[in-house]
Image 1: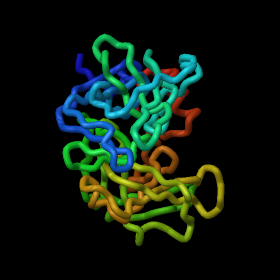
Image 2: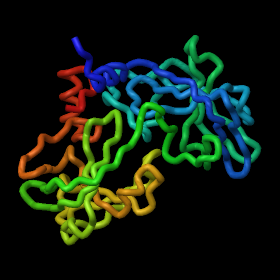
Image 3: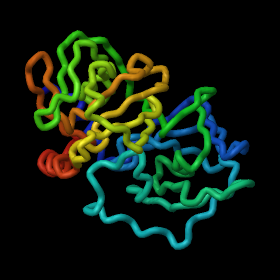
Length: 290
């Protein structure tokens, strides 16, 4: 029987996963280099969809001070099925939480010392606690990059219409389709001229993608909950996403996409309404995304 790759990858979500990372990794606090290593390991804790850098404790130019008292282990039933890049704590694998004390600053609760025989001697680091990260000379943003992930952008002439409760928000035949593995969801990035911008207002929300850069969000002008942060735009994207610069993308999980006249089903992903996603996880046990 053939194995669908998406389900195969999703079935490992509940496990502790790791992959050695060969490039040189550095992290700074101000001008002080706290991390400089060629022995980094990418670690995905259970339920996490993005990796963190774990480095040998000996490659940290900082004092490692375990937190006292240590936090209580989380009740698995209290956790969401998936933890995103902003959900730093609670940690979901056995270990000890520690502060890193550098010459100029203490980084509270920024290291997790793993209790795992395959990862002994490594500290999982909290990406946002540091001011700047580099892999070789490439500056990193948001979180560690996943070597099993890639982005493809393709121009399409398909007729794309985006609606929310019957109101048309965008209508185009000039979209850029962005495919981001392992997600099977196609993101349609639409030129602003083909978006009904009079129905949108800027939001204060900002997010950072390790592969695309910094995104600014818009909500529907009517203020309804369903329209909050309904779409986003990259004004200064990273290299992989240059073709979607100044294009607007709407959540396929929260709007209705009509492609060439055919309505499409809303996908179920970690960005779906929480109650919908948790119901799917309870019924199917894996990410699925379909």
